[in-house]
Length: 277
Image (cartoon, rainbow, N blue to C red):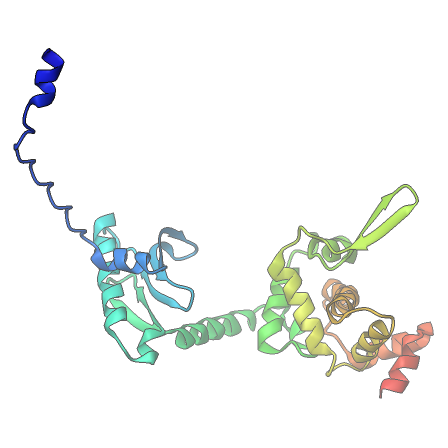
């Protein structure tokens, strides 16, 4: 009987309290940017320091360095305003700009190309003062792009690499031979510094139209059935041996001297050299 009376009761007409609206975000532009597949990161950006960066798959919209004494919320406020300014601009040139908060507390707008040019100028001015720079600037196809990268690859400590094979293996240029029973196979090194390996391979490709023996060696490897990339790695492997000797002896590279050395040793590469020229 009690159950029937409870079921016969009229439903309650008591109104529910409306939910409180969600508090507005203090950084609406950051939230909107992230919602549309943007990426925002805050943390240590070596060697600049603590920075807040907003970027997407196309470009970097803003990069702000944390000012001295600035709180985390203040840094996000500046980033939110920077994103708002970048999104309001319809100029393609300004859309490809990134904002760098400088140490003295004011933001300066630099285009990406201007920033790259500043880095290139600083690298060129610094490396030109190093005593070993003349060794790598004398290489064919090195120029202002690859000479500093090759200089950084070798360094100035002559005791770091006792033999050229150590650098060939460390850079990932030297292949790996696997053996199991009566079977063996060769593959490239999986664990190696990517940028270092890329430096040697890309520069080796630049030497083909600028070095007589490099062109002949590349064509020889392709005639053996190697792919373009495998032939470039083989050429880089040979170049490291030459560079290691120049680096150890502190002597710039000379093409004529190396060709005479090939002639004295009776290298079969000279046959390819005569046909390729």
